[in-house]
Length: 300
Image 1: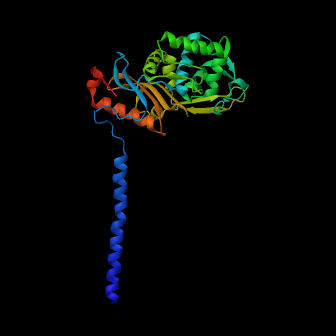
Image 2: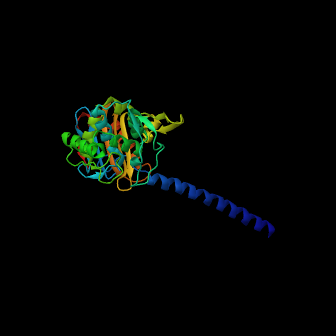
């Protein structure tokens, strides 16, 4: 009987051990099934962003579109227009700009490491706004524009009109207000225009930035808000991220894919890495379908 009991015990142990391997296998299978496929049933990019656009930057031709005329809040994508208007103004880039209490974010309560009362070179504020998406930096740039913030917002909207951005409206310099809106179609044109500015291309793709606080001498380190810029495995010529609760995660880029400059616009993505995943799916789709870069077009 003792021998029989031992045999039953060993059998039960072996069965339990074998069964214990199964959840791991099932978990792997389940995880694989939850992975997002690169393409949908039609062979187009399988994107989770609500609205998207991919353009050939050389020709302006649409390579892929998803709700491209849909209007969304664009959050800090706004800062690309902020940078263009400041650079267009020819205000001295080495001119000193003092941070004011007026620059504090009273709408969303976002923080900044730019102390009130401190002076910064205008160029440094543009860099900080584009690299780290600092809202206080953008607000200070707009406030110190000739005529103040109202004149600056007017200049932003005037440039949008000049560029033919009919679905675009700006209400502040930072993008914090949900009234800053645009469509993928408009943002494709905005990115193409912003790409003409060497400073914006340089600043927006800077991986890391150290700024010395002029009054204390303390150094503040910033990193780019775009994980793809930080990773360094893309050839990115221009980049800007954005997020407020009303907009979801946003991303615009100009990048070289399959030896072709491409503009990518992704709006209203949800999940911490969704916009990054969508961008990578677009990249793989274009690399596997070079004919798309020769003029093919699909609209989803």
